[in-house]
Length: 221
Image 1 (cartoon, rainbow, N blue to C red):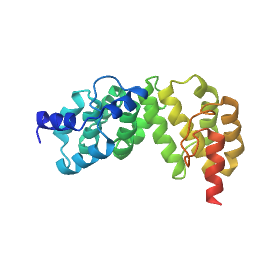
Image 2: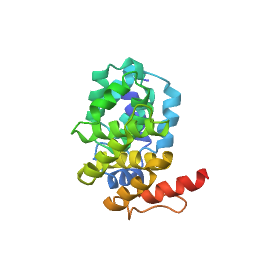
Image 3: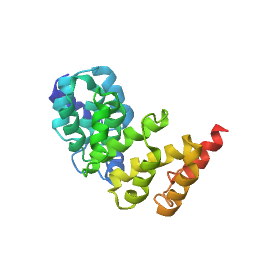
Protein backbone atom coordinates (compact mmCIF):
# COMPACT_ATOMS: atom_id res chain seq x y z
CA UNK A 1 0.00 0.00 0.00
CA UNK A 2 1.13 3.55 -0.72
CA UNK A 3 0.99 6.37 1.81
CA UNK A 4 -2.14 8.07 0.39
CA UNK A 5 -4.03 4.78 0.21
CA UNK A 6 -3.02 3.85 3.74
CA UNK A 7 -4.07 7.22 5.18
CA UNK A 8 -7.40 6.96 3.38
CA UNK A 9 -7.96 3.51 4.86
CA UNK A 10 -7.14 4.73 8.36
CA UNK A 11 -9.52 7.66 7.97
CA UNK A 12 -12.31 5.30 6.90
CA UNK A 13 -11.81 3.30 10.11
CA UNK A 14 -12.03 6.35 12.38
CA UNK A 15 -14.59 6.54 15.17
CA UNK A 16 -15.81 9.53 17.17
CA UNK A 17 -15.83 7.65 20.47
CA UNK A 18 -12.25 6.58 19.96
CA UNK A 19 -11.24 10.14 19.11
CA UNK A 20 -12.84 11.31 22.35
CA UNK A 21 -11.06 8.56 24.27
CA UNK A 22 -7.71 9.57 22.81
CA UNK A 23 -8.37 13.23 23.51
CA UNK A 24 -9.10 12.38 27.14
CA UNK A 25 -5.55 11.03 27.42
CA UNK A 26 -3.90 13.96 25.72
CA UNK A 27 -4.11 13.32 21.99
CA UNK A 28 -4.42 16.35 19.76
CA UNK A 29 -6.67 16.82 16.75
CA UNK A 30 -4.37 15.07 14.25
CA UNK A 31 -6.05 11.69 14.61
CA UNK A 32 -8.84 9.62 13.08
CA UNK A 33 -9.69 7.59 16.19
CA UNK A 34 -9.00 4.10 14.87
CA UNK A 35 -9.46 1.17 17.26
CA UNK A 36 -6.18 -0.52 18.13
CA UNK A 37 -7.51 -3.87 16.92
CA UNK A 38 -8.23 -2.36 13.51
CA UNK A 39 -4.70 -0.94 13.37
CA UNK A 40 -3.28 -4.39 14.13
CA UNK A 41 -5.45 -5.97 11.44
CA UNK A 42 -4.32 -3.42 8.86
CA UNK A 43 -0.68 -3.96 9.85
CA UNK A 44 -1.03 -7.71 9.27
CA UNK A 45 -2.44 -7.02 5.82
CA UNK A 46 0.37 -4.63 4.86
CA UNK A 47 3.17 -6.63 6.56
CA UNK A 48 6.58 -5.13 7.39
CA UNK A 49 7.27 -2.05 5.29
CA UNK A 50 9.93 0.18 6.80
CA UNK A 51 9.80 2.91 4.17
CA UNK A 52 6.03 3.24 4.41
CA UNK A 53 6.38 3.29 8.19
CA UNK A 54 8.72 6.26 8.06
CA UNK A 55 6.37 8.11 5.72
CA UNK A 56 3.42 7.40 8.01
CA UNK A 57 5.38 8.65 11.01
CA UNK A 58 6.14 11.97 9.33
CA UNK A 59 2.43 12.77 9.04
CA UNK A 60 2.33 13.19 12.85
CA UNK A 61 -1.14 11.60 12.76
CA UNK A 62 -1.67 9.47 15.88
CA UNK A 63 -3.20 6.51 14.05
CA UNK A 64 -0.62 6.63 11.27
CA UNK A 65 2.17 6.56 13.84
CA UNK A 66 0.63 3.60 15.68
CA UNK A 67 0.43 1.73 12.39
CA UNK A 68 3.97 2.79 11.49
CA UNK A 69 5.30 1.21 14.68
CA UNK A 70 3.95 -2.20 13.64
CA UNK A 71 5.52 -1.90 10.18
CA UNK A 72 9.01 -0.79 11.26
CA UNK A 73 12.24 -2.78 11.30
CA UNK A 74 14.06 -1.79 14.52
CA UNK A 75 17.41 -2.91 13.15
CA UNK A 76 17.00 -0.59 10.16
CA UNK A 77 17.03 2.46 12.43
CA UNK A 78 20.31 4.04 13.50
CA UNK A 79 20.70 4.97 17.15
CA UNK A 80 20.30 8.63 16.16
CA UNK A 81 17.11 7.87 14.21
CA UNK A 82 15.72 5.87 17.14
CA UNK A 83 16.48 8.75 19.49
CA UNK A 84 14.77 11.20 17.14
CA UNK A 85 11.64 9.06 16.88
CA UNK A 86 11.34 8.78 20.66
CA UNK A 87 11.69 12.52 21.14
CA UNK A 88 9.17 13.32 18.42
CA UNK A 89 6.28 11.49 20.14
CA UNK A 90 3.44 13.71 21.37
CA UNK A 91 1.00 11.10 22.73
CA UNK A 92 1.78 8.60 25.47
CA UNK A 93 -0.08 5.71 23.82
CA UNK A 94 2.18 6.10 20.80
CA UNK A 95 5.20 6.27 23.13
CA UNK A 96 4.21 3.02 24.81
CA UNK A 97 3.74 1.16 21.52
CA UNK A 98 7.05 2.52 20.22
CA UNK A 99 8.80 1.40 23.41
CA UNK A 100 7.15 -2.03 23.36
CA UNK A 101 7.55 -2.90 19.68
CA UNK A 102 10.59 -0.97 18.46
CA UNK A 103 12.78 0.50 21.21
CA UNK A 104 13.15 -2.70 23.23
CA UNK A 105 14.29 -4.59 20.10
CA UNK A 106 16.75 -1.94 18.92
CA UNK A 107 20.37 -3.17 18.90
CA UNK A 108 21.57 0.00 20.69
CA UNK A 109 18.84 0.07 23.31
CA UNK A 110 21.23 -0.24 26.26
CA UNK A 111 23.34 2.71 25.13
CA UNK A 112 20.18 4.70 24.53
CA UNK A 113 18.74 3.63 27.88
CA UNK A 114 21.75 5.02 29.73
CA UNK A 115 21.48 8.30 27.82
CA UNK A 116 17.73 8.63 28.29
CA UNK A 117 17.92 7.90 32.02
CA UNK A 118 19.61 11.27 32.55
CA UNK A 119 17.66 13.20 29.93
CA UNK A 120 15.27 16.07 30.61
CA UNK A 121 13.08 15.27 27.58
CA UNK A 122 9.91 13.65 29.02
CA UNK A 123 9.50 11.07 26.24
CA UNK A 124 13.18 10.15 26.29
CA UNK A 125 12.99 9.72 30.06
CA UNK A 126 9.82 7.63 29.67
CA UNK A 127 11.65 5.34 27.25
CA UNK A 128 14.73 5.11 29.47
CA UNK A 129 12.79 4.18 32.60
CA UNK A 130 10.66 1.74 30.60
CA UNK A 131 13.79 -0.09 29.44
CA UNK A 132 15.10 -0.04 33.01
CA UNK A 133 11.86 -1.52 34.36
CA UNK A 134 12.17 -4.26 31.75
CA UNK A 135 15.74 -5.05 32.82
CA UNK A 136 14.69 -5.18 36.46
CA UNK A 137 12.00 -7.71 35.59
CA UNK A 138 14.60 -9.92 33.90
CA UNK A 139 17.02 -9.99 36.82
CA UNK A 140 18.54 -6.48 36.91
CA UNK A 141 22.07 -7.70 36.16
CA UNK A 142 24.48 -4.76 36.30
CA UNK A 143 21.94 -2.35 37.81
CA UNK A 144 22.39 -0.65 41.18
CA UNK A 145 18.88 -1.04 42.57
CA UNK A 146 19.58 0.96 45.74
CA UNK A 147 20.79 3.88 43.62
CA UNK A 148 17.73 3.61 41.40
CA UNK A 149 15.50 3.75 44.47
CA UNK A 150 17.42 6.86 45.61
CA UNK A 151 16.72 8.53 42.26
CA UNK A 152 13.06 7.54 42.26
CA UNK A 153 12.56 8.81 45.80
CA UNK A 154 14.18 12.17 45.05
CA UNK A 155 13.02 12.73 41.46
CA UNK A 156 9.69 11.04 40.75
CA UNK A 157 7.56 13.51 42.67
CA UNK A 158 8.65 16.39 40.45
CA UNK A 159 9.08 14.43 37.22
CA UNK A 160 6.99 15.11 34.13
CA UNK A 161 3.87 12.90 33.99
CA UNK A 162 5.27 11.09 30.95
CA UNK A 163 8.36 10.02 32.90
CA UNK A 164 6.53 9.43 36.19
CA UNK A 165 4.59 6.52 34.69
CA UNK A 166 7.63 4.42 33.82
CA UNK A 167 9.61 5.53 36.88
CA UNK A 168 6.72 4.11 38.87
CA UNK A 169 6.91 0.91 36.82
CA UNK A 170 10.59 0.61 37.74
CA UNK A 171 9.74 1.21 41.41
CA UNK A 172 7.10 -1.52 41.33
CA UNK A 173 9.41 -3.90 39.45
CA UNK A 174 12.05 -3.55 42.16
CA UNK A 175 9.53 -4.21 44.91
CA UNK A 176 7.95 -7.16 43.11
CA UNK A 177 11.14 -8.94 42.09
CA UNK A 178 13.57 -8.20 44.92
CA UNK A 179 12.49 -9.01 48.48
CA UNK A 180 15.61 -7.27 49.81
CA UNK A 181 14.35 -3.93 48.49
CA UNK A 182 10.61 -4.52 48.84
CA UNK A 183 10.03 -2.72 52.13
CA UNK A 184 11.83 0.39 50.90
CA UNK A 185 10.05 0.36 47.52
CA UNK A 186 6.67 0.22 49.26
CA UNK A 187 7.72 2.99 51.66
CA UNK A 188 8.76 5.22 48.75
CA UNK A 189 5.42 4.61 47.07
CA UNK A 190 3.55 5.50 50.24
CA UNK A 191 5.67 8.60 50.81
CA UNK A 192 5.20 9.97 47.29
CA UNK A 193 1.54 8.90 46.98
CA UNK A 194 1.66 8.95 43.18
CA UNK A 195 -1.35 7.13 41.63
CA UNK A 196 -2.82 6.50 45.09
CA UNK A 197 -6.27 7.52 43.81
CA UNK A 198 -5.86 6.35 40.23
CA UNK A 199 -9.21 5.13 38.85
CA UNK A 200 -9.16 1.41 38.02
CA UNK A 201 -11.67 -0.82 36.30
CA UNK A 202 -12.91 -3.86 38.19
CA UNK A 203 -10.38 -6.65 38.00
CA UNK A 204 -7.45 -4.35 37.20
CA UNK A 205 -4.51 -3.80 39.54
CA UNK A 206 -3.88 -0.26 40.74
CA UNK A 207 -0.68 1.41 39.52
CA UNK A 208 -0.16 2.76 43.05
CA UNK A 209 3.15 1.05 43.81
CA UNK A 210 2.35 -0.37 47.29
CA UNK A 211 -0.87 -1.98 46.04
CA UNK A 212 0.77 -3.14 42.81
CA UNK A 213 3.75 -4.68 44.60
CA UNK A 214 1.70 -6.47 47.25
CA UNK A 215 -0.78 -7.83 44.71
CA UNK A 216 1.90 -9.24 42.41
CA UNK A 217 3.89 -10.75 45.30
CA UNK A 218 0.68 -12.40 46.53
CA UNK A 219 0.16 -13.93 43.08
CA UNK A 220 3.71 -15.26 43.06
CA UNK A 221 3.09 -17.02 46.36
